[in-house]
Image (cartoon, rainbow, N blue to C red; front, side, top):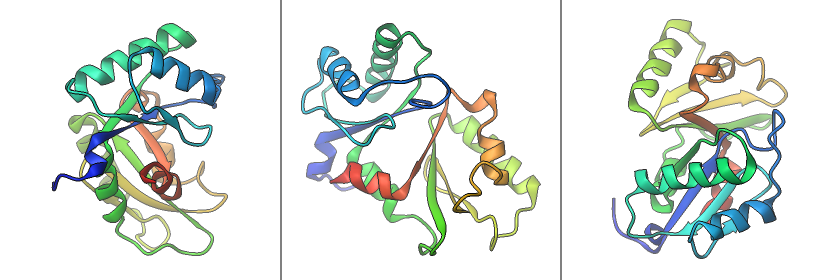
Length: 182
């Protein structure tokens, strides 16, 4: 990956925030992340999206530190996906289908390669119709499109929302991801 200004920023994607009883206000989230020593902290929307200045700390160490800090501050089992902003840009650019009116363009981030392989094998076993349930593998992600209003009933949504995946996956709409790049 080419070096760019975006490589100087990291994106933190919290899983399960402001759903299922875990409510964190953006101002409190920003304060918590700043309290962990991060600078340039910006929250995006109210769904657990944070952009911070990169540090010299390895991503895996920063991820564990953020999860521990969130868990301590907000009293829940916190899981995050942490990636370089430049890598996020590559994920967005690689979205494999054109946007369709009445559909959501979604990306599920998977922080464990074994889980990614398991999800993709399960998708293959479902035998999904690529017109009505498009799902494709990406670099550490699963791309999918779903009709508006049908997200909870979509086969991939049912699969990826299983409890065994909650510590390693989080899903975002491509529109949200573009906002994290700005």
